Each structure stands twice: as C-alpha cells, then as structure tokens.
Amino acid sequence: MSVVIDITGLPPERIVFSPSPLAELGAALHALAEPGHHPALHSWATATNAALKCDLADRLCEADFLWRSTRADILLPANPRPTLREELDDLDTMDDERFVDAALEISCSRRSYATGRPSPLVDGAERKAALERATVRGPRQAEFARRLLDDPRTVRAWIRRLLEDCESAFFGDLWERTRPQLTADARHKTELLNHRGLAATLDAVSPAITLDEEGPGPRVVVDKLTEGRTWAADPALPGGPGVTFLPTLIGQPHLLALYAPGWRPVVTYPVATPELPQPIAQSLMQCRLEALAHPARMRLCLSLSRAAYTTSELANIHGLSAPEVSRHLKAMKKAGLLTTRRRGRYVQYRLDLSTVARIGSDFIGAVLR
Image (tube, rainbow, N blue to C red; front, top):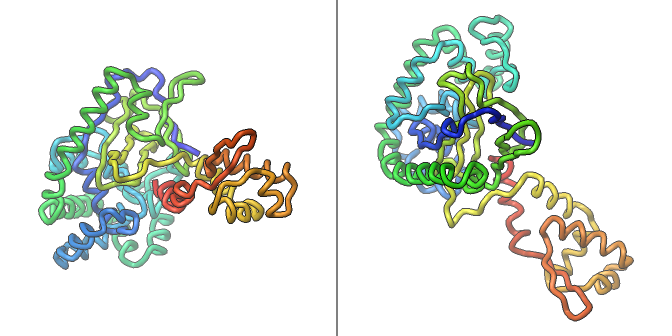
C-alpha cells in the first residue's frame, strides 16, 4: 500500500521544499495530545502540558480532533510562509465549505478522502453523518462540530485565536529553536534537487519515499499503510500545480501525505537525525512478521539466538529434515533476520539480534507514519 503522487508534466521548479510554522505547530499539538507517539519528546511534552493555563488547555481539548489521530489538511499549507500569521491569513481566504469539509473529514465525515463528497454545509445527509460521528467521539466534539456547521465563520475565528494563543504560550520559543534546522534541511534538499535530481533528493528525504519512473509517467511513491493517488500537475489546483515537502523535527516518526481531491499534494517528512533509526519499508516489516509467525521458525530462533549453527545441526537439534530447515532459513534470511558466515564448506547461521530487537519499534513506526 502507498500514496502515489503522479508528477507527469510537472516542471521541476514546482517541487518545493520549505519549513512551515503552521505545520510544525500542528505537529507540536499532536505531540502534546499523543505523547506516546513521541518518546523522545516526553520531557518537553510533560513540561509544556504542565505549564498551560487552564483556559488554553481546555480549548485545546475541545479542538484536539484536528490533530490527535492525524493532522487536518488545513494544518498542512501547500504554500508555506515565513510566519504563522501569514499562513493563518492564507487560511482565512479559504471558503467555508472547503474549510469545514477539511476540518471534519478526519473524524466526522463519511466522505471518501480519495474521491470526495459534498460538503456537510450544503448536503443534509453529509451534515447528519458528520454530527453522528462527532457524537460517537464525545460530547465536546459533538458540540464543536455542531457549532462549526451552524456558524463556520465564528468557529474559524475561534480556531485562529487558539493557534495564535499557542504561539504566545509555547510555540513561539519552540519555532525559534527549530526553524534554523528546518530551513537548513529544506535548503539542502533544494540544492540536491537542482544538482542531482529528484530520485536522489527523495532518497535523502526518507527511505519510505521513492521515485517510480516506470510506466507512462514519473510518480512519487510514499510507503504508508493506506492507499491514495493524486495528480500534482493539475492546473486547477489552488495555488497552482506542484508538490510541497515540509520538513519537521517535532513530527518524527510521522510521514504525512495530503492527497485529497482539489488540494495540492503536501508531504510532511521528519528530518533525519543520527540518534533516530530510519524507517523500513512496509513490505519488509510484513515479511519479518510473517517469517517469525511459523512455530518451527520460532523454535529455530531458540538455537540461533545463542550460537551459529549449520542446517544439518539445526535439523538434528529440532527433529526436522535438512530440506525443511533450509526452507525456514531461506524465509528468515529473506526477511533480514539472519547473519551467515562460512567455515570451509559449511555455512553457519545466526539470528541477527539487533534487527530482531528493532521489530517492535519498526512496527510502531510503520503504523504511525
């Protein structure tokens, strides 16, 4: 599964790398709402939540569906600006139907994200479905959704004030600390794009993003546990055709891809840091889980975790035939779970403990991104 961004006919200059204060604020709010997703930010999240004034904390709880489970599209600007105020000004120019649809789709609307449905502001059935789903989420979200549908202009102004108050309370200082590194990363990616091309640039962005040049046209493929497709060269896109890449420090390990119809594609990627492991492909993650699911392979791991063994030794230890052991070892080696070494005419196998130890964190990273 993956999100595919078709870039056929898109000029290279329409591929943009730039930091966004609004996107980073959205990442920070998500980290405060779901600190378990961001263990490296535990101290910051704990201290920031403890320092919030009660009124601001209550308002954040009221609107947290905009950033808790995922990020609302309104928090991922396709045309980043230097300041949060400028990006909020751009957001104010969005029409009410588009704003409300984007705000409610992540938790309330039953419309298909990939194909689109009528806005709940103009369609009675969509409004009813949005309110029903909001009610399931709890009374606060139900009331918020009802107010947003009844008086979108007032609630939009309320959301803007909330984000501005977050900037005053904690995000302004955070942005000043993170902006230089995000700017440097975006500049580096732009230089890579100009000198080495898109494939090398995407490889530097994340192992989970690749350029597929097979088929009728080039495509950016984002490896995620979801499916979607969009065309970045559509001249009707607001702000013009293109793809926007937003670096994030707070958002690790999440890799977000905006691909809704009528929206310019946006990819938010975590800036690579030496202390954090790089993501692995979803297919490799699945291969490793399947390789360990067989009971015979689990028994082989009992031996292979302690010492290196040949195929015949393992067959004798576990009462299996040599061809059976060979098939199991082949599956485990394909998944990258084994190391091998040759001793004369014998090949010895051993469990790669460092890789196995990462399976839990790799799995969490795969489902969270």
